[in-house]
Amino acid sequence: MKAETKEMAKSKEQDLQKQEVKDEKTVAGRFYQPLTDIVESNNALIVTMDMPGVAKENVNVKVEKNVLEVEGQIDSSPYLDTKPIYTEYNVGHYTRRFTVSSEIDTEKIEASLDDGVLHLTLPKKPEAEPRRISVS
Image 1: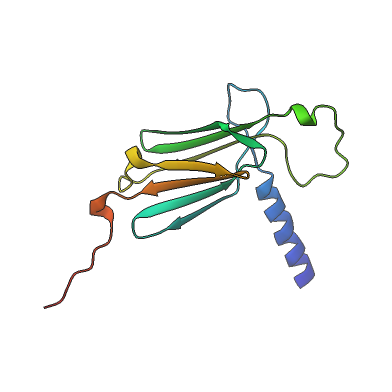
Image 2 (image 1 turned 120 degrees about the vertical axis):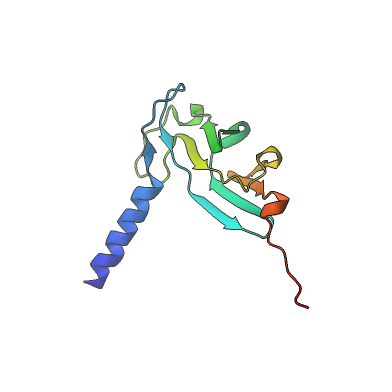
């Protein structure tokens, strides 16, 4: 019974990794949600997204009405003349949206892309940062 549970969990994980986004887009092709980690420090949120195959010039990060939207488009030309035999990695564009708290300073968001991994730093506004209160 435990073996079935592990296999079911593995299957669900693979389904999440291959989750295709069905929203209407202006660019033809498949869109997937990139696997994402979000961690918090005292003064920022750090967002890390896997976007293999995406070049820096093909990443679009924008904030509008407290919604952070990330899109990455791949150059699919290297895959046009291939026939998949076995795949775990999906070829397609990436898109992801998050609602951003009012505690985030959206004017100071920074982004970098290294080896297919997008790093976003969302700094907190000074009044949102924790402060130590001394006891007298």
